[in-house]
Length: 71
Image 1 (cartoon, rainbow, N blue to C red):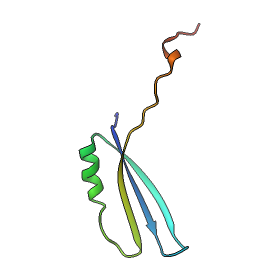
Image 2: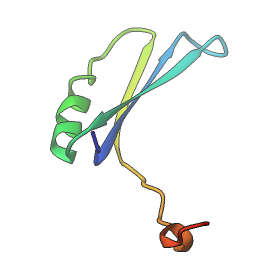
Image 3: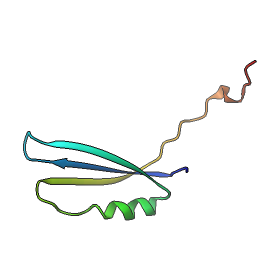
Image 4: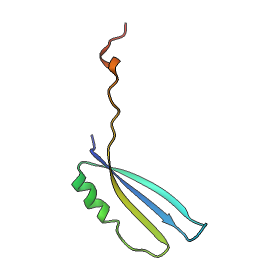
């Protein structure tokens, strides 16, 4: 499956200097699907910060020597 966007969710628990943060990433087929899913995480919770953002999938650029067959 080739995805065009990545849904990145960052969750932070706790207060002050005693915070724990973790991040999850999910591939999405389109920007619309990514934004739709990101909006589902916009839930206010006490002592929990949830940030969801859509980022374009970065694919490595082809190297010039990819077409050269090595013998």
